[in-house]
Length: 322
Image (tube, rainbow, N blue to C red; front, side):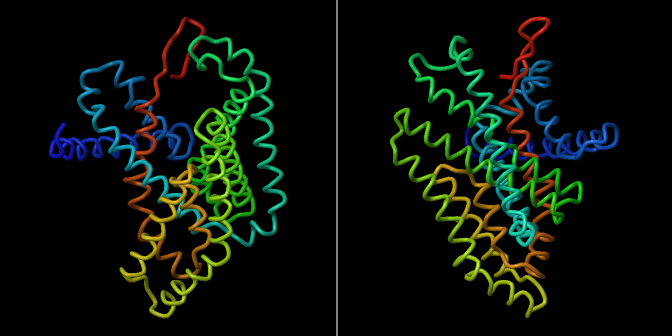
């Protein structure tokens, strides 16, 4: 597929994704009482091989050819990372400081339970043909399973909290804090597992040290370096294009840094957003970016996940997610 053909198909894909996610999201909200994001997640599965691909495989393959998946992946990562940046902008740092021990306790519980389950099920899973490569040590397999179960749907959690109007509440702050700590810990464990399986110790060191240094920098020196943006916006009474460009450049660099060290762009966006100055600057930045992010970019994330998910009936009693 040529770049020109890819461009033509991309615009059609975006039209379908936006329309279907909006329609299914509204139906989920009205008929099931679920948040918009739940409907968007369902829409992503419906557009994938589970329904659209099963009913009209040729049409689904034409609309979402394999060659276009890389482009959709990049747009999805950009959308979910930018959304978590906006979530960070609304994150109540004062609530977090007051409830940090509680957030750590909730996160520790959220990590401990999945790893306990992994200890119980991994010996059985190791005997399942085709699930693990031959000869993988039981310890690495257990850590891998625990990390996979422990990693949260952090963007979806944030979207539900936002849609329910809990973003600025102590409960919402506690949930977001625990989710962020949980995900960072699980990704770190995953990096350690990959390092022990041959990727090299440098991978784990880079993820752990890089993540800690990034958080410390953003919450100390980074916060001070960003503070003038808030003062300029307050003095000018609006957010001009230069300030918007600076904020978006900072987001791109934060997302790049976290992706590069083996964590995730959403982590970089969220921490940067939390370190940004509050007041008119944050409010105007959210007002400018949120509609495009939520309506256009974020649905691509759920659709891309759906395109790589297939529900397969194994027999009359079992349903397997592939």
